[in-house]
Image (tube, rainbow, N blue to C red; front, side):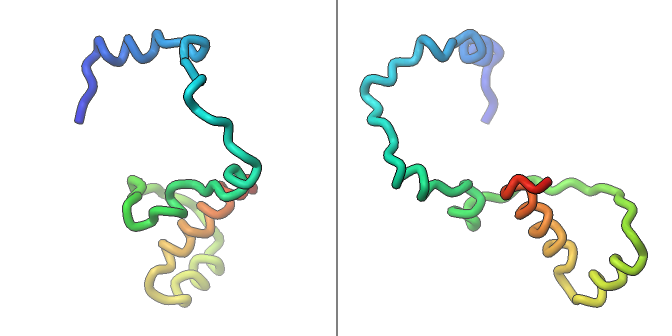
Length: 89
């Protein structure tokens, strides 16, 4: 699905101050505490785009990853994602 240039300009011109929030109840602390990123809640529905990259890592680390068996690249990706989600990276 694509968006027209005109509609995109319309959206970009819209200011936050013009939004009417009167019909939206504020979120409670309990609701906010239950919020999770969509990729954690709907894993089967959310598929991030994968990019092929080149990275240099220590040979012993690469060997340990490969020895860990099939799926090692996915495990590295999951580890990195956890770091990003937790704000560690």
